[in-house]
Length: 302
Image (cartoon, rainbow, N blue to C red):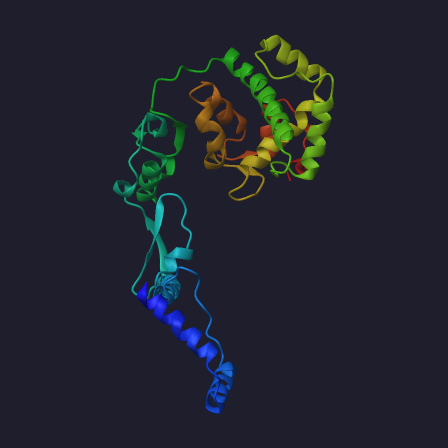
């Protein structure tokens, strides 16, 4: 408090004293000097400078780390991780399964086509990578989600029922996407127009538990409503690469969750491959779902 009183008395004394010529000149010189920018109220000027310096250091270190580690911008497929060689060139190598995160429960387990349960899809992919180039690795695929279990054999009458439920499900998935797709870009504009016709059709069979007889009757009476959903699902799966054929791996996102619920899934897709070449063409896929040959249109999957 004494310091502030002394400071105010000095200011008062200077204000009351008549300014000398030297004082005026000195004030003019001071006025011409640039005024240093004041730090924010309550901020420590030294701390502000240190924070700015630290921020610059962080940016530099991030840029340096990126330059020193080309793996940060190098993508590897599932089961592989990026490493650099002696020349600091990034390359993808098989991941060690032990480096995969531990699963949090059985819901993360997956079953391979070798009937072995893997702790997670990461553990499966790493194991499959290590077997690349071998006969065992070539045959190993992800079969379904969840631990391996006994699945009943699919009988002929049951196989004929599978596409009835599947077609109806695909149609309802598209309708649901249409209803929710306001600004989410879940469907393209062309797809929305096609689904809109299905959605607004008064004869559309709404989602629900329907008898197989009703599903079969609806497919016969409202056949045109099912053409696009069957094509759409093919296009959703044909991604790696987009070549008009579905491989076992491309089918996996659809097969894996279905098998535990629909025990005819595996047999259905195996028999879709009519020429047994390990690839399902659009014509084979459409035929499996009852779409007539003249209605198969590659433009519908784009």
